Length: 303
Image (cartoon, rainbow, N blue to C red; front, side, top):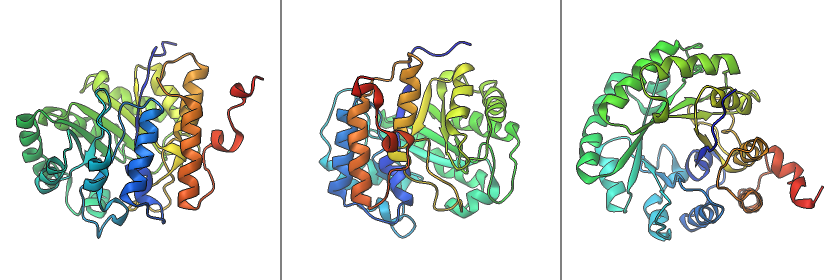
């Protein structure tokens, strides 16, 4: 078993988490959450998205969020920018990192962004070209890497082909998403190995939802095979507006606890993270969903 010495956690709660919550936080509240996460030690925190507020009203005002954030030399605040118009709006708001997103399922792509996989890549091409000219980093997301709510099982070769195309377009990192939390550890490992045969492992990230309670197990299995970048969401917030029944991402507190227990460096202060999780749940009017938020950090109690 060859586990990484360090895992970079990409905190997606302020975007992927909040976009599927019924309550809407103000831009000021969202910025305060991001500041708390930066204080807790995260170096990459999704700050929002430049998509239609009619489609995702929870992300309205992302430009105000960015304007409220304290610049930190080693912290990145990426935002979703699915097309050139979104990219230009993101840049006008000061974004220095963006993400584009597609799916390994034609049906999901139509429900999610209203176009085919091929059309989504055509939309991304000018974004990547502009980003390269502006020295802006671009991340690519692939949804439904381990299953689709409309088509069922997804062939890993399809995921690998799509990842290869995103890499060729210029995405510096590609996040592999189990959008509906359908995968199991062996399936996750097979999918990752298939993709890693096309795209270098160091360019890949894991984005596993916890719908069926498999997210941490899937992450661990992939860490054993060389993955070292993991997306997670504070308090287990989120889901997907266009994937019925999908639960939130792996809860960041649970992920950090697991990694720290294995001696894997994360750079995250778990106590500060738990405090932020409790606060955001209170703002949203929901009960905590992570195991750590419910149980507390017994290590800090001296046991």
